Length: 403
Image (cartoon, rainbow, N blue to C red; front, side, top):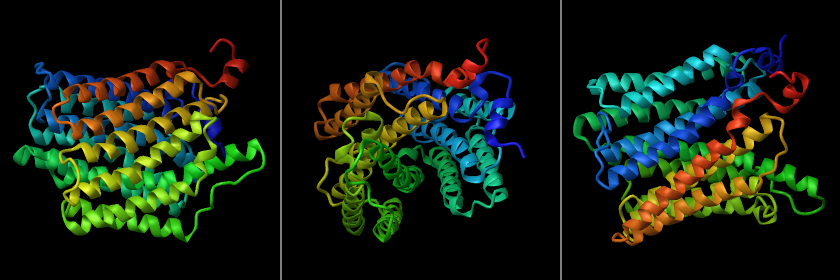
């Protein structure tokens, strides 16, 4: 039987279509920067179209469902072949999925005069097709353990559909439960997947450095923390400003920070590629605390607390995963240079500036600073990783100098 690696090497077309992470990570980085640039232009009053959505709804959708959807696609199409031992999606089938994602971004953004229903159908075509493709591989490979990841992705598709419905019905999608459900699903994905990869990658790196404490293995504490996370997110979606939700958020925040404290992040300062994973996961717990205090009437209000999750947990963790996976699958050393470290610091700076701007409503410059740092981080990613994502693996180039 042909292995996944052999199937990838058999592809003779453009290298960017040889593995799912390549086009989707690159396009995710470009879109993250472009969408933020358009948002800043909207904030300063420029006449920038936002399709069938209002500006705020478009901004939320572009990053929560557009950007994050691309990163999840790249991750899943890279991880599922490892989980199942089955063939990856490469070549022209991969190109078809990329085109579906691109058409979705155009339909949601450009003033094409399409009906809200048609825009929704076009936008949902990509995640629906991806869910079917991933589901087929998981079921065929009998990889039942990861069905929960597919289930979470299916709920994300439903949240996207609800977002479209809410905006068409009343123009308040950004504050609707569909937007909260989409954010909650992604945070739960980070809690589940991050709970696997952060301690695993940290353990591998620390083990090579010699004696010392290693991350605690996953045990009942992690299971309880994830169960609490799931219940708390459900309450937040349904009753975002209830006192019970606020208390649960504070408990869930401390639980996730306690999980993180067991993974020896304090020993990873020498390698940005590792410590950034800990930083991304830290924003999960910090986001719960921010949202919890807000629900109890002790926060700044507005969307500042949610941006700890949106820009922090999602932005930092996805950037961490994209940089690491791009290096590893390209056959390059798993070590971040100064350039990658600057990308991480830029996005972390964007999170902090956005949160502080919520505490200082009159300081509009902080919002613009946050957007500028975000753009710098993701433009930097696209530029720094362009050749890694568009050229064959280093070992393949050595074997075939003409490539």
